[in-house]
Length: 320
Image 1 (cartoon, rainbow, N blue to C red):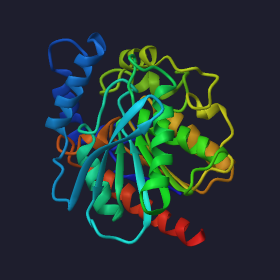
Image 2 (image 1 turned 90 degrees about the vertical axis):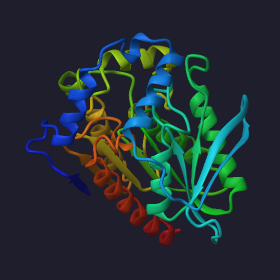
Image 3 (image 1 turned 120 degrees about the vertical axis):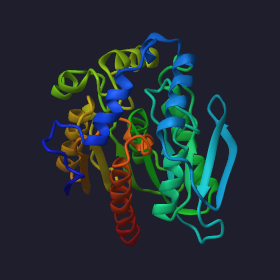
Image 4 (image 1 turned 90 degrees about the horizontal axis):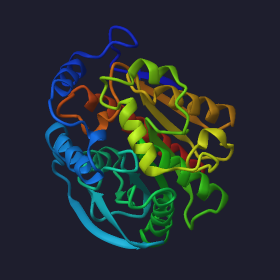
């Protein structure tokens, strides 16, 4: 299934609100994110999300806690718009940020919206970041968190989701749990403009690597700090078998350097016999899920994908 949400005038043309945001962003003076030490880059990202994303909004329950991980406590945040519910599916969400930046607050608005629109609990995971904790610290924490949710949250199955680096961690965790299952099944995946390989020979890198928020320089910055092993399936799932993964909704953005590798992974899933739905946010950029105030049309992309994911989860639960 292929859908394009809110199409632009041409596949490579930004929407009007995207163009306005990029003009504002590219006019800013001062150091770029990739020119800053990691803590400075993290603070810059937090500030951007506070200004550019929609606020959390009304939701019945938001609860911060921590769970045991392979190297200490892992902070998590639980969102649920119905605090009293029967056990059902639970989303485990891994934030983006190149494995270097991002936290529970940068993706707070999106997680609350997912909990409302999916009508299920969402648990956001604050995994360890590079360079203080380079590869494979992040996927190890995400695996541990998914297993903990399966063991300790009343649920019937896990929905793994995440964007960018978190999309990579979504797929990596699913591959690990495919081969060494958790106590509850993974019933659906939702990688959003995921990074699925360590190589950069993609036309979308050449077309959108400058001036579209995520740049070639920032990707190099993130990759150098993360120091992933390209021979490890968790770093480069595109190069490893995908057979046996659960139903997947993979989303890309039309003006994203990562677009073509996301398209390639969707094709790989289909070739592997995985029930696959694919959406591309035409005319939109990398990172749009937490830019919904600065780019109002992004809310349509978010809502459209979550509506489809809800249907995929319902079908998957019916087939269990």
